[in-house]
Image (cartoon, rainbow, N blue to C red):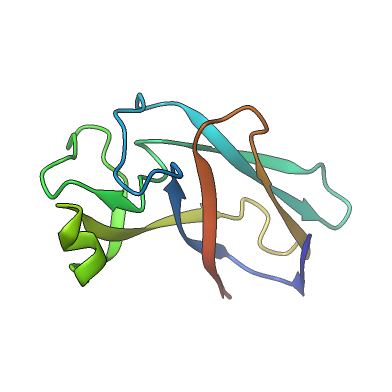
Length: 130
């Protein structure tokens, strides 16, 4: 797990999903590909599923490949040479976890992929907001 040992109001995740083919497939929105498990001192663990669409999208996407009703929050895009060669853009996505008990210390976060998923979640960064 990722040790935090801090009080916080929010945790921001910068992540994406990778399908291993670099070209993307039409995986259905709502497919759970992983989860964050947040461990707080003296409270039950909280599990946050990572589903394609609402929480994250594919790292390599076609420029117009979004459904605005279920589109994740795009935090960063790039049109690097490798992406352009594939006719895609590279995207990272932002998700925020609101701590319902900000006075409870967040001890650790587990980042767990779904074992039978054809798509792998990739975590790039975590930012803690006091």
